[in-house]
Image (cartoon, rainbow, N blue to C red; front, side, top):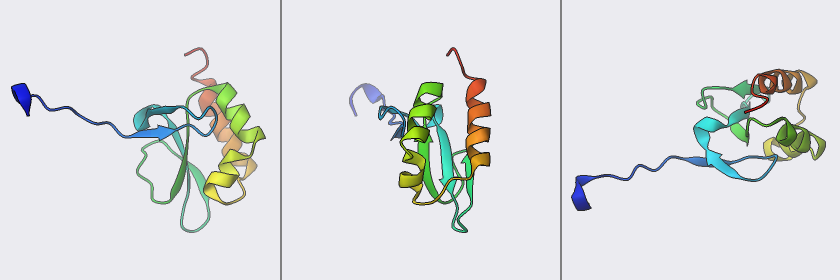
Length: 95
């Protein structure tokens, strides 16, 4: 440890839409619980298999069209989850 400074590592995850890596806190997590239910996880702490998406409408459309959520979570995604995700991303448009 030179100069007494620590380097902090932040966990990164890959967006299922564009494939770029971002810090975990900048992404929205879609999680499949052990009971098979699919929901949005804004805390990043829910147990289960997760897929991450950056806050871009284009990435969401690309991931939905290519069924990347289904392949990453290994289950069928209910339309309600897509609706919630689309509503959440509408607040981030233009950023």
